[in-house]
Structure formats: C-alpha cells, structure tokens
Amino acid sequence: MSVWKKPTTTKLKMPSKDFILASGSKDRLRLLEQIGYQPKLVAPADIDESTHLHERPLPYVKRMALEKALAAAQKHPHENILAGDTVVAVGLRIIQKSKTPEEQEKVMRMLSGRNHRVISAVCLVDKNGRVSSRCVTTKVFIKRLSNEEINAYVASQEWVGVCGYKIDGLLGGFVQKVVGSYSSVVGLPLYETRNLLIGAGIL
Image (cartoon, rainbow, N blue to C red; front, side, top):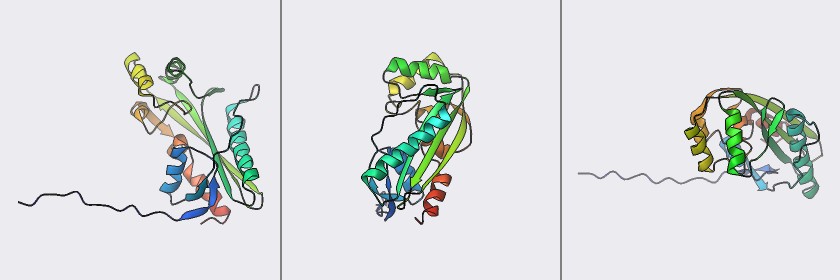
C-alpha cells in the first residue's frame, strides 16, 4: 500500500521593484506581492495622524497618504515612494483605531445592521518629486450583529492596530455585500496602485 506524502513546495523569492513602501502594514505588503510588486525597502513613515477640526473622511485619508509619502521622500530622496491610508467612515464620522475592548464594542454596535464606507488613498512620489494619487470609496454592508457575535469579535483581538476591523478575518462572515474594491477595504486598491506604479515606470 502506498502512503500519500504531502508534496514539498519551494517558495521562489520575488525580485524586488524599484520603490519604497512607506507603510508597516503587513496587509499592504501582502497585497502588493499578490500582484508581483515587492518593494525594495519597507520604511514606515512616522507622522501625526490626528484629524483636523471638522475634517471629513475623504480629505483626511487623502492628506494622510500624501503626508506619509512626503515624509518618507524626505528621508529617502530620489527614490520612488508609495504610501497609503485607509479609514472606515460612518456618515461624516471617521472610525479611529480602538484602544480598548470597550471602544471596539461601541464600533461594532455602530456598524451592526447598516452600511458604511471604507475609503483608501494611495500616493506615489516618484524620483523626480512628482506626486500622483488615487482614492477609492467602497460601501460595505454588515448584517445585524447579535450580542454574542459582537462579544466574540471583540474577544478575538483582530481589531487591534486597525481602523474598525479586518474584513479578511472573522468579520468577513458578517459582511452581506461589498460594493467597490475588496482590496481597498483590506488596505490598498490594487488596480489604482498598479497603474500609479506603471505610470512611474515601475514595471
């Protein structure tokens, strides 16, 4: 009788492309690698991410992506710099990263049984200092959550370090519909990002 053995696989190292990713997000790095774009360096930008008084979600996320890209460009002159930012917005309210389980519980109750927007901006500063950016808005519809579902999601700790939630985690089972770019909800609109990189000559 022959015994089945799991075949061994070798993961080939992807050649890096001529750009720096100004983000420490593992999701953004994974998404880029998914379409064959591995940055030659990951150098997260350290900026103040506070909102301005009465600042709305769309201008905020655009400003964040731009400021991250410019901050990284100052540290790495004459390099192609890619940066991005993503926020969850309910009406005109920007959902920031929860610091406690209690804060996250309030977020889940706010999202329960309604639709909201996820807005992602991506910005590229090329070697010559030219700035290009794109912004994508996606609607996400969440089912009405029971107390048990909310408590289980909060206890999972998936929300730690992200704005609102991770759609590619447990919360994905509560999403009724996504209208727009799924990759943008994860953290980076791939179609728009690839076009920016190609436009800068990064093939």
